[in-house]
Image (cartoon, rainbow, N blue to C red; front, side):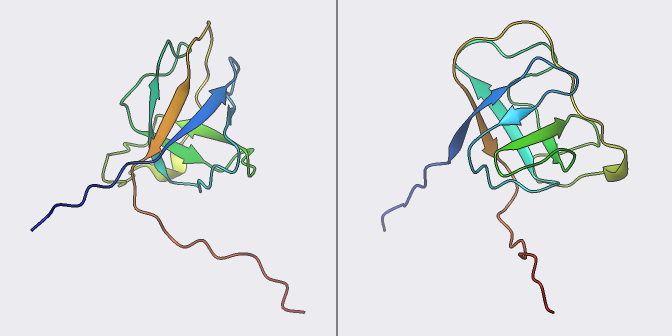
Length: 117
């Protein structure tokens, strides 16, 4: 019997050195509560680390931008505690390289808004 291996999808992003830090990734498809980890070929801004679970928060979220929180007890299984007390990450310093993120929690259906008038 042959084994099938699936490549994990890493998405490239940029981030601002700001309070709060704004993350940008074209059509990122993330929703509030998603758990991601970050990787880089260089250096991340101060306030960010690789291989640490971060939680996507709704504040200022668009199709191409989002904020992250390191609080709330995120785990790699996607379980979140203290969900209501998430605060955006602030960053500073300089960065280099290409940054990517990987969504850790399972995909889910997100209903589209409908006008039933």
